[in-house]
Length: 108
Image 1 (cartoon, one colour):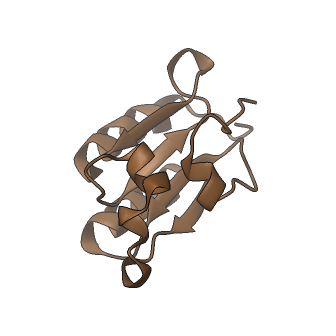
Image 2: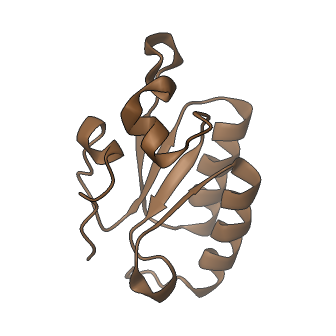
C-alpha cells in the first residue's frame, strides 16, 4: 500500500481507505460519469465530496491535485508501476479506469 500523505489534498479529505482509488467529485454530469465507471468496473474507491457551495474546488488542497480547480479528480494509490497516480478531467479518468478495469482483480 502506498502512502498518500504526499498529496496535500489528503489533509482536507483524509483517506480512510488509502488502498482504494480516491475520488474527489460532486454529483454533476462529469462527476457522475466517473462514479458510474468505478461502479461498473468494480474498482474499489473512496468518494470525497467537493462542495461547490463551500468553494472546496478553489481550496489550495484541491488545487494541488487539479490546478484547473474542476471536478472530478482521482488518486489511484496503485497506479502504473505500483506508484500513486493523480489524474483529472473526466475523459482522461474514464480512459484510465477502462484500462485499469481490464486488469483489476477482485482482491485489489
